[in-house]
Image 1 (cartoon, rainbow, N blue to C red):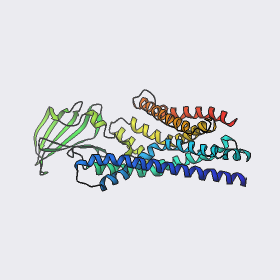
Image 2 (cartoon, rainbow, N blue to C red):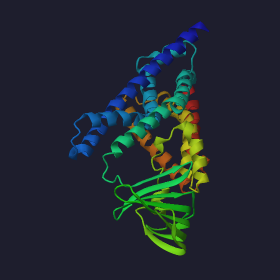
Image 3 (cartoon, helix red, strand yellow):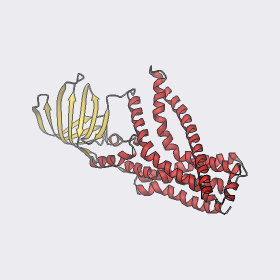
Image 4 (cartoon, rainbow, N blue to C red):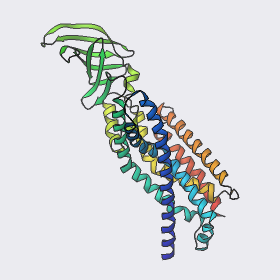
Length: 363
């Protein structure tokens, strides 16, 4: 018992060291690549190097989070290849451990790391991404336009023909905003008038506002029972629905509340629900990656050719990535149930790994 405890402690320590080293490699590579991108973005701004460095520091942790399944795959291959080349695998087998037994500690650690990433690391990265978008957004060309969904309704800010418009709606129903209020201000933020309407068809950027009334700056109704008013906006139904295009700004703990908010406001929550399922599947996904790495190293021998392991690692990472993206796309476009689209790739990897590990354990 004590002997197995010492062996398992050694396996766990070596595996964590390799995961940490691989994470550092990916972090610094991601930092350098993103820094060049930020420098290119700010080439027309007099901001120096501090802002690009700050933005890269804020952005790269989220990149590391998204790439972590492949970091685990590469770390697993590195670890198992190391103990094979150093003949440690032979010593472990002499101690009474099988190939599957060697996988147990890295598998448990991968699953635990996955839970840590979802529950603790993800809220940090989502906060960083929000800060990243706020800082970078302040340098964007279009600062006169904004759309947001809050507990108080749907809010839109836009500037048109020298007039600042703030638009509020209670919810979205198909292509219509319901219970619409349009507040108009001049360039000095002086209130001009308010338009109240039952609905607004936003199928195109040329909105059709229905059953409207106009109230002046003194609160007097100057026109009412207007059947239709045309209103030109920079937003249409597609742009409004893409408000949550960057789901990385939403942490795991906020997803359920955001799903309920979207559904209450009449928005499709498919992408948000897919994100929630992907978060739940993250620890099993890491586990499947470590099992897959065990199949490639303990179950398949390439006569100590490191380059062949590197090649198969790259090919596998690419195939898993695109298979995941393809399956997720089927879920988001309603071709498959969201749960099936998220969990199916992981289940397939588990089945493949189980078959491979049965073969590996016989060696």
